[in-house]
Length: 144
Image 1 (spheres, one colour):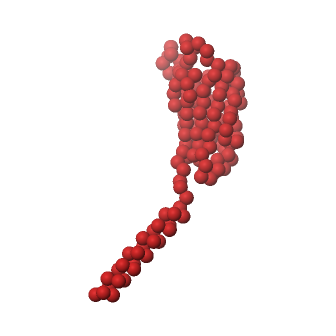
Image 2 (cartoon, one colour; image 1 turned 60 degrees about the horizontal axis):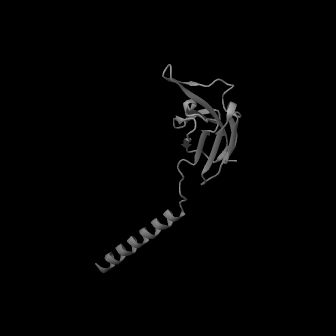
Image 3 (cartoon, one colour; image 1 turned 90 degrees about the horizontal axis):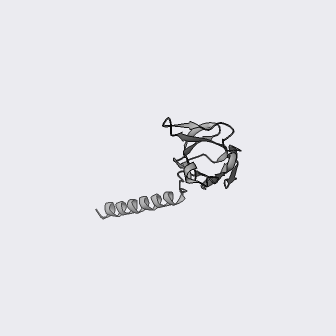
């Protein structure tokens, strides 16, 4: 009886030790390791501040859209990407109040450049900030 109790204690101690070492070796998993934030800096008059959002394309594939808000407000999009080099393209849509629906801006008014290349590294967060100005001129920062 003492031998069975002794073996049970040894097995229990061995299992918990193995379990702890496996948990310690597993690297933390990052969720939503990519974030893009966009805002328009050219709006000076609240009467001209339209509601908008941006469609997001990664590697020429549609992956989602930013939050909706006024042009002067920060709009964001987050997702999980594989570590690698990626191509980001953004497309601006504004609310047509007369028809009650969002419409894509014509190409002349779209952000320029409308794309950048960026790198996502393993177990790191990549953030890109895009600031659009008058006539779509866009400045990107971060993520390179």
